[in-house]
Length: 457
Image 1: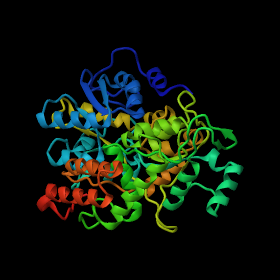
Image 2 (image 1 turned 90 degrees about the vertical axis):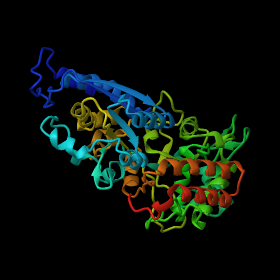
Image 3 (image 1 turned 30 degrees about the vertical axis):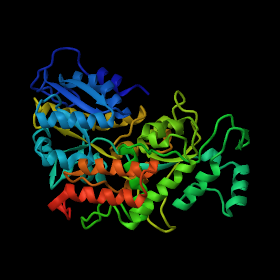
Image 4 (image 1 turned 180 degrees about the horizontal axis):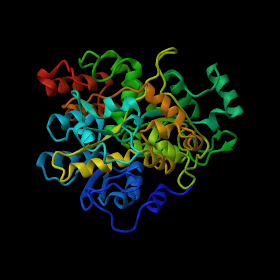
């Protein structure tokens, strides 16, 4: 298949175009000569958008500059840029849990007005209705106002080495040791049993081979970092704990939350050395390298598992629901969606909006999928070519249907700081899970003050 960039460029005139008219593709050239500066997380999606951006420029005359940064550095850049009103970035892709902080501070443009004003300027490939419905409220709506457009559909899943789980010798050995059949875990008890079973040292046998290096039953993001908090929330949600209850009260140190952190800590026995310095980058690399038999990870990392240029486990990885505490419980993944937002200080908000709409158009979203990114549209996830190419996609869709969101209140950044500190303290052994979460509860209560109970999510 020809790349989208080639197809679009081939359909555009190389001559001068009336800047007050839309070209043959339906995208207005009214803002030709405008420049849009974009800041986004350093992910496959962002790289792909940057590669395709010249096609957008060819159609609209709008120049696009895409800058990327890792998660933590991006949040720092965004916060500094907004608070100082420097106007360095027109379009900013933000994690949804920062939406309340940025929207509540007046940094973001009302997106609904831009959508209405530019409805006749976008091409036929864009439809807001095509964006996965459940993402809108989570990623882009705050206190009744739409402040952006969901830019990806990141969601957690369980990754596991299906070749190991399907090996007959391993199945027989597991049945002898644990008394039940080896299978991808559906409960956390099974997950821990699987982690223990598949932890092998150099010289041990695994699936008929003698290991030259150790293999671990699980890998964990345990660094003092957002990654460890987000991983813990998967356990906490399943145990009935978390950060905020449905009625808006803090439950950080509830018995369920404490039990979930104790459980997460217990998995460290079966994880690679140094897991308390690992983020999702290390988890992804260890899965790719065949170092671990299972892990929780984000759906947007599944593409690299199937890339023969960078993965040793092509065709060997399976994808399943995040486990539950007890059989019969509802499986819940964790949303990780981001949103394209437009700064109040954007130089040309209409041009910025056209870029966002183009990035979310059907052809671009399909190309993101074809190149290993994660789209956010129904049409892309249901596209037969993409479904055939990416074995993780049916599971990603299923996980999106039952995913839970992190808190999005304006104080979330300060809350996250405390959770990063205290989850890390528990994982490295500087505090018990109870002590760590008691401290987190106390500090977060102080941060929130009169805001409790929280009502806006």
